[in-house]
Image (cartoon, rainbow, N blue to C red):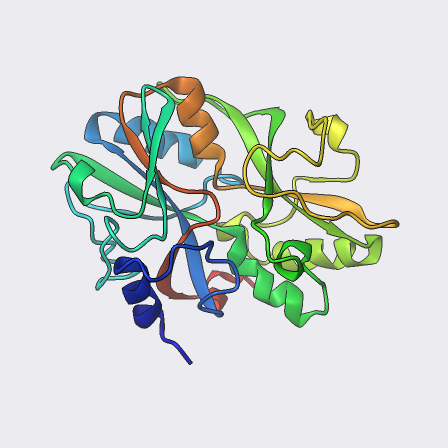
Length: 258
């Protein structure tokens, strides 16, 4: 079985550029936001005020691409399959390596990802449709405003997994044990109540099949910072591309609460 370091090595050399769902089973995956130090306090406060969408795993030292706590042998400039570069709120490029964009004043934030609690869902017999269909998870902007902090404000983004009602109830119980990777759902049922008008057109990721008798179940999503960047327009930000996460050395069970 491939180790976490071996998988990160494949990502670093460009041999893996796909979404990371289902990879490195048992290990915590993380969203990434990198921005200049002058924005770091405001963004830290934004995360603290919005823990359902932005649960912090680690914040790096200024100028360091090494997450010393969660993966001390890793390099955040190279070890994600795909990154997004934003300038003044506009997405300008997707790349597989951000070394050329690196600056000495950059601070990196690793934010919990709902991929982390999917193994417990599967182990409890709850199917995950986008994995079955070989797609990226569906993610939607909502009409739920995040609590603003300094320059940062914007809408909550949610990830969606369709389930039978009995599975949705069990999923609430299971994911409530993982508050540091989004925890319990923020909404179940009618997407229009949270401002989603077309389930076949997610704002990020891919659409998936919702079968008869299933309900959409929505979790806070770590792509929220990207919607926030687009709304707030800081001059320069690097993020992961949706679904292309950073894989840490932290075991999933370390995030579970009794």
